[in-house]
Image (cartoon, rainbow, N blue to C red):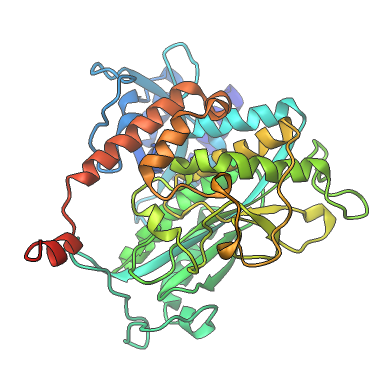
Length: 454
């Protein structure tokens, strides 16, 4: 951090009378790891490079346990936390003036740790920059509300809103359905304003007690930071109202899953689109970007569908894609092209789930498009009908379960090149260990149908 940045940071903290600072590091699952320090110790830690965490946090599973990997040693060397001044924000739900800041991670020689998710996204963006390309993204994030669920063996139940009655039917785009939870959403908007998170709109989605927040478009790293902080914010706000907010991909049986659709485009360094010509015609780079997504998304699935639960969302006719077809204003495809003016030409990647780490989901989606652009790839013809019923062969299909997805990612030399060989190996080790842990759990379905029948 430069002396100027440190001086500005000190002034920011002083103006707001901040007494504590949370140093946040997103792990592989997108969970906020880190430490909380008094403000003076935080500033001293920056000056003396004594803000540290063990590198082993990137080998932790979503359960909190350590994964089975050869890449991290039991010595667990420390990393230096390097706060990014652009991410400093207040924590609006605390009474005591507190700040939060997202940190990069560096080794003892000052090099960024290649397995840190934020570093992986920065690595992908640097490869765009080498070609004078500037990607732009806008996530759309879905989530469900639920009654407090103390016993995880019990299914989730929709919460009651102002009427006192839980939703029992779907209320897609219903204004009154959103208004049921006005106090919660007003607080979320207040929190986001305090945290400088650029929210565009709020709607009630298709599922029971399911909502969607759209973010303003912008720089991918800034949007990943905002999404990371937003997910934490929504969960905190919901608990203040005695309910849960969940970003699980499929929390309710027989309801649509929750996605993190990523709208993405690419401009030149002056901000002019590379996806549409002056007359509005699609450019070759735009079509190559789509082709890259078509080819490499299946191998990226552990990054955008990271859990066993993720694949419960990716089924026919429940507002989720099952293949990599693309089309104009077609919500049955994995890659939708919304109607827009030429400058705003973009592709909406509908495959990622809300459960994905936003840094890794955005990195994966952009990496696939980048490979297509670099390799001058050509996509299939645009889908004009129902993609759920469309042929396409194995190359168009998404993996149907996590183990298949992990193996495809391990075998992808292209993703290893763009995202980093060490990262891909470690991430796959973490996902494999999580799957092994899942295999030790006996589900209610098994007890219901197998206990006395087989």
